[in-house]
Image 1 (tube, helix red, strand yellow):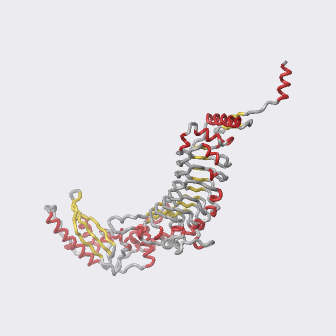
Image 2 (tube, rainbow, N blue to C red):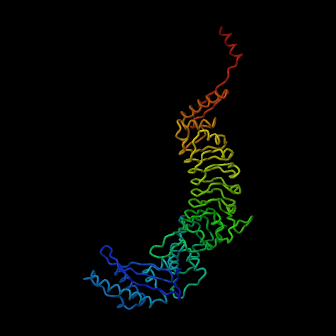
Length: 482
């Protein structure tokens, strides 16, 4: 990665020009070590730069090629100006290589691609805006390049050929990141702007983040994280998405050499972690590293490649689990795999049966929408769960059955009015139909039903009672009548 040290030679050439909206742009190619990028500038930008260098740094005024108004579109003139501007750039770089001034560095985009000037740009921002950035409640977004630059400076001193001021001191960066509570690492697999830098190929550490509470890694390579430092002890929310993670240990043990979970391994435990979101990755298995986050309450593993559930019984506080949009085709004895889960999302899989959910007695919300459930009878596997209140089953073939809602609600017996089916409470008309269906079922089974169906509105109750007649009372009434 490019860092402007005494041993790094800076090359700047103008190899071509472009026309844009009637203006000639000179394409400057810059290289610092292995890093290369391009900048496009018009002549007026060169003139503005030159005026600043003359007034602020004593550069000779006659170095810049003169301005020309008439004939400045002539190809021969443009070619000559190109070579003159290239000579101008090389001259001032040779003259100022001992301390590249800010004006020249920003003109050539050093503050975007080169580590030292990138850090100075960050320091300048944090010097003036740190309090606002830390108190507005929004997460701070940093790129792998910025984190790489911070990690690089922690290991290497400031190059002697770089000018430094109070507002560009690295201490402003170090102090700022140590106070960040909410961090988003925004990565990329594409070249950064016009450079050959691929940010997800850059390594970095997070050991300067002392106060982090929420960490989100978006489209970044977690394999490049070298050290977590205090992050494990302070973070209560962790999100890693679109990062092509295949195993959970890749992030929970990202700074461990062997990636193996050791029972009671305190140095690698995430002591405060409550919410985990590993959605939109390529996870194929829930490995035992998940036990390093024993206090997790909410776990999102949607949009992965899971086919089975493992190791979640070791999370005693887990109440909400999303397994949506995975590769599940069947469920077996889920009560032995999930513990006391209250909310479960299994939508957008390829399930055909709900049989494996029949003993999840703590379950209050179940989403099995957009699967391949075809029979109404499958709902009977969850209809006796005592805490179930919300059931989402829309998007399955069964949802196309005539009078689907009343047939599903009928399976819940006297609790039918308590069930929110597909995000809708049952209407009184549906409850009346359910009562009739339950009476018919009881008659077929040879029972004398007593049904109480309550309207979802708390002020109204409709009761249908079927009481067998008392024979002696009926006979007495008949005698009196005679």
